[in-house]
Image 1 (cartoon, helix red, strand yellow):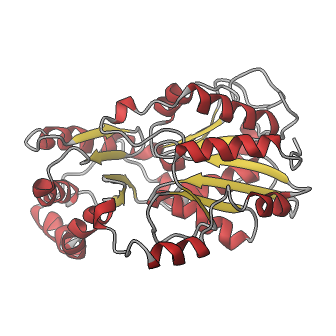
Image 2 (cartoon, rainbow, N blue to C red):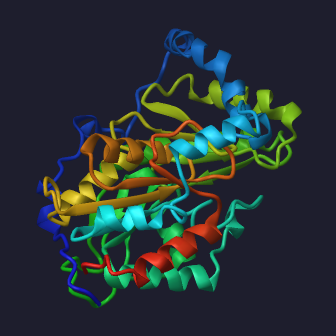
Amino acid sequence: MTNHAAFTAEDAVTAVPPPAQASRHFSSFPPRRARDCRNAALGRMDLAASLLDSMKASSPRHAKFDAAADQEDWMEKHPSALERFEAVVAAAKGKQIVMFLDYDGTLSPIVEDPDSAFMTEDMRDAVRSVAQHFPTAIVSGRGRDKVFNFVKLEELYYAGSHGMDIKGPTTVSNHKAKADEVLCQPATEFLPVIQEVYETLTAKMKSIPGAMVEDNKFCLSVHFRCVDEKEWDALGEEVRSVLECYPDLRLTKGRKVLEIRPSIKWDKGNALEFLLESLGYAGRGDVFPIYIGDDRTDEDAFKVLRNMGQGIGILVTKFPKETTASYSLREPAEVKDFLRKLVKSNVTKG
């Protein structure tokens, strides 16, 4: 194992304080009046008008880009990280690389059954090799335990629930974090309401063939990849109706999935900042974070890197998309190739 800096339990408390909103108490909920629900519903009218369009936009066949000209123009702005690999190496030379990886669509293919999104052994070996050279974190919308069970590498940092559940390596290494220390959970007070909404949504989704509600501990995912497109509007309406009386939750969209999260300022970008701070790399000019992801939720991390003016974001996609990422890769197989090339290069500073 390598000499990566690591964070302790004390670092987790003092490095990046949890947002103020997370301190609100949700262990019991006052009953909501009908007027409260109506007012909440009025506040979501703009969501009702745009949700179906957003759901369609998450499907590649609804993409707004023309195949030829737009693809070429997009690739000029977001070139392949493999084809421009030497430029990446040159930018990272002499700096400490810190690797951040999304899971679904990045390390594993997007599949119809979210519980079957297994990564290949070749990909696991590639990620293991990267972690031997650089501090490496998995940042996923999945629950932390669930994504760990997919990856099965104890030497990594894991940030589940879109970064709201962060834990350090559990293997014996130079990392200081203990196996049983949860390092950051800024949304703990939301657990009761998340569970309540999960049970309600699960019951409602039974009427929509193919719909699935996934419990990711600090957030929920409503998958509609296997739902007939004619039912998307009905699905969105069911989700909206449930959330009308929960103003403390917010709705975001991913790749054929609706995400329900606590209304706190915490996302994958905050998780990236927290990990850099905890590792002792915040504010240093000799650090080169690389974040690879395929989803809209990864844009929060791409924007953080762009604002920092350090490192690079790499979007995994076969289709042109609006993004803040600097580079692109087409699919998980290319992610694997990129990781292997990075390990073999002379840029390592582990």
